[in-house]
Image 1 (cartoon, rainbow, N blue to C red):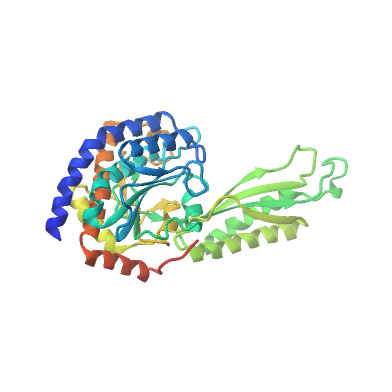
Image 2: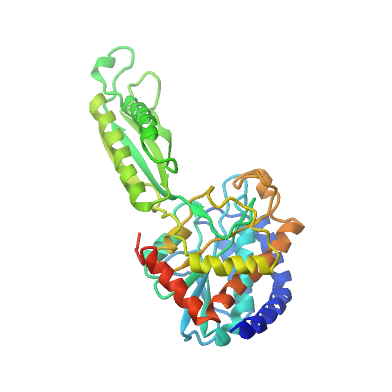
Length: 398
C-alpha cells in the first residue's frame, strides 16, 4: 500500500508541475474579473474551458444552476467516487477577498492532476463547480437534488491566515422578519397609527437580552432593512434581517425558535403583526472526520506545511458544512496572509495574485491529490473514514 502511494505521489508531483502555469493564469484572470454570487458566468465558463482542454467532459450548466458545472474524466465507472468542490464567487466592492479565485484554481489543478490516476485508485474523481457560496449556497441546492449522494468523499481548500487541517464552521440560518402596523400622520394624529418600526426596535432589544442565555458559540446579528418611508409618517411596515449561527445544527434551530419568540413578543407589545421568510439556505456546521484528518495531517507534514492554526477558533460559515452531512468532507486551509489579516478585507484581496498565492495553488493541489491517494490506496483507511462518518451521525439532508 505504501509503495503504491509513493509511486502515485511521484506522478502527482509531475502532473501538478505540468499544469501549474495554467492554474496560475486561471487564478489571475478570475482575480482580475471578479463576479458576484449567482453572476459567475465568465468565471465558470473559463474554468470549464480549461477542464475541457485537459480532456474532461463537462455538464454545464449543471443541477439547474446556470453557473455550476460537473466535470468528469474517462470511463467514470470505478468503485469509488470523489468530488473536488470548486468555489469562484467574489464579494461586493472588494473582489476576491475570500480567496475563491485561488481556491478554485487549487481544485481545478488537483482535478487535472488526478485525472490520469483514476484507474490506479479505482475512483472517479469529479470536479464540481459550486458557486454562490457567499449568499445562497449552491451546495445546498445540489444536496437537495442528490448531487453528492454517490460520493464517498468531498474536498476543497480555503485560504486563510493559518494552516488548518480542520475548519470549525458555524451553522448559519438567515431570515427576514417583517412587521406590519398602520400608517398615520406622525404629528397630526399619531394615535391613529401603529408603529411597525417600534416592533423591529423591540425585537433587537429582545435578542440582545437573549444573547446571555445561549452557548458561547452562538452568534445573533441583524440589521434594519426597512424602517419606514418618512419621519412624518408612522411606519406601517418595517423589516429586519437576522443571522443565527451555532456549532450544532439542531441547537442552532432551537435558537432560531427563540429569536422567533423575540419577534412575536415585540409584535404583541406593539400591537403589530409579523411574518418571517428565509433569505438564504440554511448552512450546517462542519462534521469532523477524524480518520480522514489523520491522513490529512500526514500529508501536511510530508509537504512541510506547518499546522500553525487554532482549530478551536470559529472560521465562519460555509455550505461545505452541508456536504459533510452527506459524505465525509474536508475543508482545510492554507495560510495566504500574515496572522491577523482577516478574510473579507481589502488586505486579503490584495494577496490573491502574489507569488505566495501562486505557490499555494501548487501546494493546495498536491494536498488534495495526496489526501485522495493516501486514503484510497488503503482500504482500511477508506473503511475507517466511512465508519467515522457514521459515528458522527451519518447522512442527513439539511
